[in-house]
Image (tube, rainbow, N blue to C red):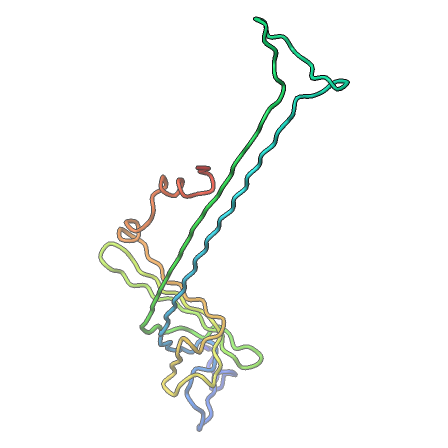
Length: 187
């Protein structure tokens, strides 16, 4: 814009136009009000029992005798049995809540007028950082007069809240513990 011109296309405002975020580069404040609750449980039980009997073989109607010595004969009859059972239980429950505000940027205006937004907030606390990343699609009709929108009005939202540093490391499971609960550990 350093060309000295008075008018630049795409940067004009009508006198009676609303100053809501509608263009690439505009800022939009998102009010986060997210909460999720999920639970899942599963039970499995399986039992299998087998019993097999092999009778003494006969040859021309007679049972063959195999001498073992000492006047006794071997009995070729045999019995097999096996019992297998499996029982498994599992349960999982999770509840999350995320509140606050984040200001994001309009990165694209789609042909239908919807706004593609993206932004990140980083907060340094003591010995680590907390990151909040947000992206998604917003309808211009959902943008309030103060250029704000509720997070529940964002389509295809991606909300990531992660941290690094000493606190995040303290909450992470160690490599040996991860090995014992992995598929590599067969027992």
